[in-house]
Image (tube, rainbow, N blue to C red):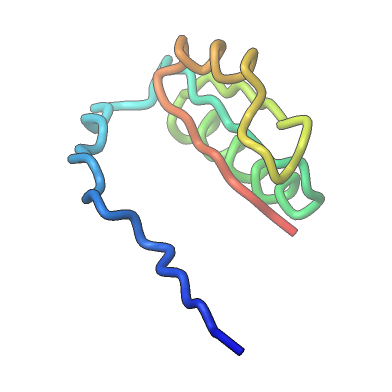
Length: 92
């Protein structure tokens, strides 16, 4: 019997990544929240939305993916281009 072991690492290094610059303030900015739709996200994102709106003056847009284990749907990602910031999260 032969045992073949596969190495899952990619040969090339990861592309250089630099985070987006920090917003000086969230006041008046649109912050999108994308949920995977599992029940654990709702209470967390409800609290986060209250914090963003009441304490930081943000405008919050919430969207839920159609499939919790897949990437966000194309229309959500297209809409996200107009947001100033985005929060994506999972919950069980």
